[in-house]
Every structure is written in C-alpha cells, then in structure tokens.
Length: 496
Ligand code: NAD
Image 1 (cartoon, rainbow, N blue to C red):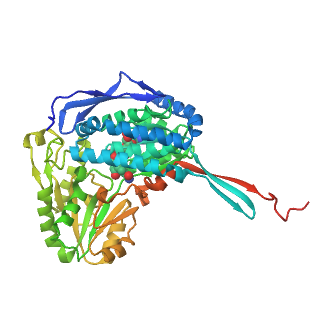
Image 2: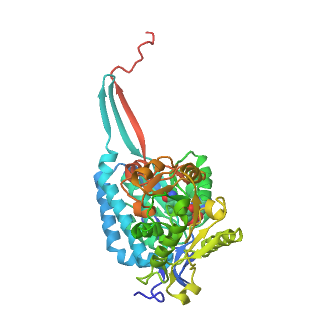
Image 3: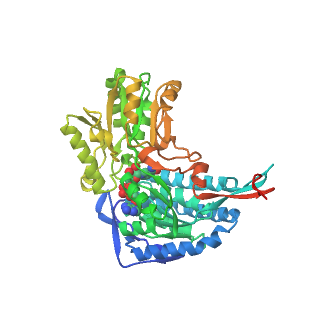
C-alpha cells in the first residue's frame, strides 16, 4: 500500500502558446484525507494571463482549423498513448488531491481514454461533408469548427470532464483554453500538459484561477463557445456572461437524480441492491449523475430499507484512498463536507431518521480528514432540503410512494433533469422511464455504471443545455455551413 504521508509536492503551471508559464502567486491544494499535507500548488493566474491564452488560441485557430482531420486524429491518438503511459503517475496524484480511492481514480482514467479513443474513431464520419445533388442544383453541408473554446470544469471528475471537451473540440478543428477547479488541479494539469505537447503551440492552452479568470474566459469576444461543467448557480452566471457576445454554450450542470423502486423489485437480489448502493455512494456521492433520492413503493419500503442497509454495510468501507479495501474516501473539500452535514442535521431537526452505513477502516485518519460517515436518511417530508437540493456527498434520502402517478410527479417536480433510474420488471420500468423528464434514464442500474460514451449525455431543465459524448458531443463543436450551388439561382416570379 502506498503511504499517505511523504511523496513529492507537485507544482503545475499555466500553458500559454505552447509554453509552460509559472507565476510566483500560487495556491495550495491539500490532501482531503489528511489536510495538513499539501499535495501541490497551482498558479493563481490573472485576467491578463487569460487574455494572453485566449489570444494564443485565436492566433493558432486559422492553421489548426485547416489541418486535415486525419492529422488531428493522429495527434489525438499520440496524446492518448501519452496519457496511458503516464497513468501510473496520474492516478495516485488524482487520488491524493481528490480523495477518491485508487480503483475509482483508475476508473476515471479508463473512461477518459475510452472517450478520447471513441471520439477519434467517429471523427472522420461525423465531420464528413454531405453533398446532395437535387433538381434545384447541388448543396454541400460542411461542419466547420466554431473557433476558440473556453472549457471550464469542476473538481469531481477532472480528467474525464476536461477531455470530454478537449477531444471533440480539437478533432473538429477548434482551439481551446481550459480552466481547472482549484479543488483538484494537479493531475489534470499534468494530463493537459501531455496532451498540449502533441499539438502545435496555441492549440491547447490552460490557465488557473478564480472568478476573474472565469469571467474573462466567458466574456472575451475572441471566444466563440463556452463548454462548462459545474453547478447550476455558476452555469446561470456563465450563460449571462456569454450572452453579450452571443457565444455558443454547452452547460452540463447539477442534478438531483431520482431512483424509482417499483413494487415488484426483488429486495433480496443482492447484486441489484449492491448496484443501487454503488450508484448512491461511488466517489463519496460526488458525481453529477449519482442517484440522489430514492422513492420506494410503500408495499416494500420497510423490507427495502433493511436489505439496503445490509448491502451498504457490506460495500461501504471508508478510509485511506490508497488502501485497496477502501471503497469510499473523504469528501473533496471542507465547504462541501459542511454543506452535506448541514443538510443531514436539517433533515434530522425536521424529524428524519438517520441511519449510519458502512465501516470506518481507519479511525485516526477519519478524525483528521474531510471524512464523514455515509448515511441513509428517512425524511418526513417530500420537500425537505435533503430531498430537493443536490447533496453531492455520501448520503441519500429514501421515501415511500403509493402509486405511479405520485412517484412520476415527485420525480419530475424538480428544477433538475440530468439522469434517473427505474428498478423493477424491465417492461414496467420502461413504461415509467418514458414519463420521466431527464437526459438519461437507466433501468436496473444507475450513475456511471450505466454510462455509455457512445451515446449523448446531458441534462434537461436546469441540469443543462446541450450534450456531451456520442456523435452529438462531437458535432456540438461545429457549425453547419451550407454551400448552395443552385441550377438557376433565380426566383421564377421576379420580372425581367
Ligand atoms: P462550480 O460551479 O462551483 O465550479 C465549476 C468550475 O467553474 C470551477 O472550475 C470553478 O472554478 C469555475 N467557476 C466558478 N465561478 C465561475 C465564474 N463566475 N465564471 C467562470 N467559471 C467559474 O462546481 P463544482 O463545485 O466544482 O462542481 C460540482 C457541481 O458540478 C455539481 O453541481 C455537479 O452536479 C456539477 N457537475 C455536473 C456534471 C454534468 O455533466 N452535468 C458533471 C460533473 C459535475
């Protein structure tokens, strides 16, 4: 087992026009399992740095946009090889700065390269121009790159959520400026450096920093599209910032994904129950698409809770992310930890029962880090904040329902609509799934377990605008350009 203590302090820089740019003003990133340990430092870039990065991306755009797609694919494939070769270094670093266990960080790396490879495999076909010869002449539709892309992403899946933007943006011929979250900036900066090295200077740029850098990336007139993943509140302000110059936006925002347990669901099916537990607690619940509220048919509610607690007690083992027996690490940061704890306290004060889940493997570390005991919460009200808000942490509320109409209305009565899941007989679940307002609905599985990068992913309502993954996630980085060559080019009724 790798020890938590010791190992190097990592310092990452900005990348502007192919150069690593370091600055004296740096921010620290601590290890959430052991906050006394500083894992590394990121540069606190200024608004001027962001302007220089955007200008570099704009200067690189004309040549890069004219580079043949085969050449773009070749470079991306070399970048993927580079990431794979560096995974022994990137995975433990992500583990240390983020708090997710080693298997989980490895899973993120796997999804990261899987999507990049898939994007390479579909790029030629998805970007090919369409030519139609018809009675009125000939029409050519090309998929042109949009221009400079600002890509802003959160801390929970930094490798996956940066490359979900980098791969399609570059394959389609755009240039990019990225900004990581200060809560997990290190592994992703090293990954972006590996990628940037495979492309001409200015094609891949990166700056770090706070709101002022974010504002520059979302308002600068040279930026044509903002690709953002993060919270809904930030998403709203980004959309406002982007409005002045009418930028194209993709917004992947928060969710409050419901799991609906139908009356025929077999609570004694241990595998299914384990799958449900994982869909609530993977990455300590800090995933946009985690199942964040469970509605169980009243006829099986009591038995369900009993079996759920059994399954959770088996699977949940909280502790040092480097311990291979651990399934859940700490919460990523103190602010998030306190927010989740306050939701649980609030529910308790409104009469909810709170059931602790799982085992704490390392009590000393638990006291030091941003750890919390995972819980199942049985709220009294359907509109308790722990049910209505996105918790983004290791807790999940379970509530009974009486009939299908009621549960569909409970699920849909939310500002969010990212993913959802229905558990029971497949046909029955499919009928219910069709009535749920969400970008994705999974049957008898949920969260990343049911994710497939070949198909589009995104939210409805205030969970977002646009799609990532799949062909749609690639063409989202293009503009359609129609070139018409009419046979006559004149309207018949115009007088001579
Ligand atoms: P956040 O919105 O606080 O931050 C996201 C990013 O935006 C960070 O890099 C942050 O530095 C930057 N930022 C903050 N203010 C900004 C501004 N005014 N202008 C420009 N950039 C700004 O989100 P977070 O706490 O890092 O991440 C958690 C949230 O992300 C959750 O709500 C989760 O559901 C959501 N998320 C959504 C998806 C999805 O695909 N829909 C995936 C993962 C996470």
